[in-house]
Length: 301
Ligand SMILES: Cc1cc2nc3c(=O)[nH]c(=O)nc-3n(C[C@H](O)[C@H](O)[C@H](O)COP(=O)(O)OP(=O)(O)OC[C@H]3O[C@@H](n4cnc5c(N)ncnc54)[C@H](O)[C@@H]3O)c2cc1C
Image (tube, rainbow, N blue to C red; front, side, top):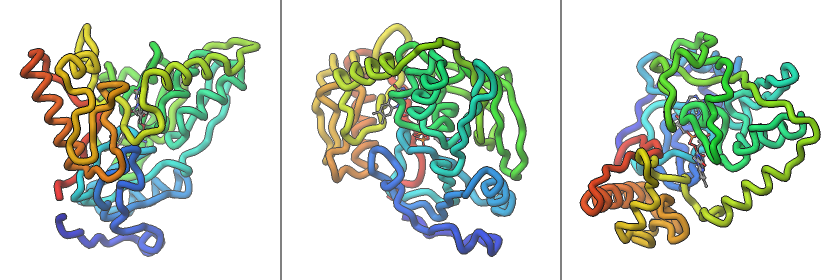
């Protein structure tokens, strides 16, 4: 692990940040080394003030529920901001429009939309992340996709200034939403369809379908690779004979070949080695080069 840099923070924040926080506590893979600085803001104003006083040369990263994140064992140099529990406002703005802050879990959006008589948000119930992560990833499932519903987003830049941006300012694609560099999502206004009388049947059915086909409850980050055009990563991995293939305490799920499971003591290096092995084997046996969906960050141990 590289040495932590000492960072001068405003006194108000120096007392509230944590140092050397293991990212294994903040990722659904339960792996990953320490973050030099870990900050849980009280709310969006507090977060803006933190970013404003953070010296410009300190790398900054925001996380939600860490459900799409592989943090290497050497950890993260710089500051990590956790939006969970901080940016948690969720409100209805009109018959069909809602505003949600980035730390709101997607499942809460799904359930609340049903209560408000809004449909087309049910698929959010199966995404075990926050809205911020869903915006960054353009998360989607069962035909639904995050950015299809976005009217505009509020972002914070590295100097601590807020901006409102429209979807036109992003290159949006499958599991991708590329906007201006060094900006993070604070909130989004989204639109759904009115459907009076809607109940949670749709959500329950989607969750049941997931339980049948995916290793829910085990430590994973969901699909490791994006689906190549016209095919499925899981099919290619299975056809390469990799179901159940193991490195250390990490293995390719026998239930869904595009999931990699940490059985308890896998390190990020094991998970990354397995990702690389799958990629190379699939390329050799099928000629298809898979692209990782999971975001790999941090330093090697
Ligand atoms: C069991 C399981 C099933 C899954 N199924 C699906 C699925 O069906 N469809 C799907 O799309 N995904 C799925 N995922 C992956 C994951 O849940 C989504 O990508 C989710 O949107 C990530 O949200 P998060 O809050 O956990 O983001 P994190 O993992 O914390 O972060 C992911 C990326 O987003 C960035 N980020 C987080 N918050 C912000 C913010 N506020 N502003 C800017 N950037 C930010 C991070 O820096 C990082 O680069 C699944 C994961 C698991 C574990």
